[in-house]
Image 1 (cartoon, rainbow, N blue to C red):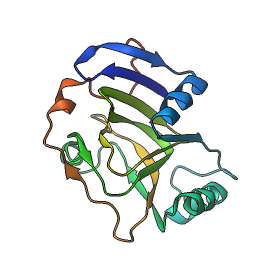
Image 2 (cartoon, one colour):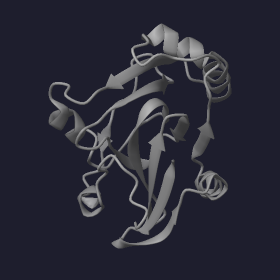
Image 3 (cartoon, helix red, strand yellow):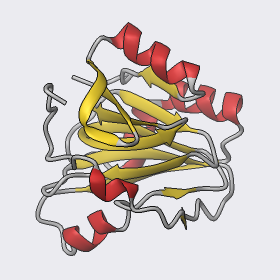
Length: 187
């Protein structure tokens, strides 16, 4: 189940909110300009489906989001447990950074945690299969795929060459609990 935990930026040990309630989650994120939706496939998708099959299964939602948000290209990224260089790949996203364009991801399978640094708060959103999260360009954030990642995600881009991460230089991400691949309901 998707889960939202909100912390004050100075106190990663004491959450201000921890919820899996979809109404509360969507409301809190919407107030900060973050889009969160749940999508369903139009037809079953096998675990070994290629990118074309995955995009076909979610075509109506993908087309709607692209039209509404101005995304010009999409692709499918797959990270599976046991892949080469998992530690290096995970580390690439663990520091706070921004992008010049939105970071929009739809989880086809698996999970990961996005951490958004907004108005002296850190919002930790654990996304799972069926979740779309769109973070506006310029938003300070980081992503943790966990120590044994396994996910497939549709990625959306405004610019054909994709996004570029711009590090903030802040050490805030290291102070917050990492994602271990499960939902910690105590945090």
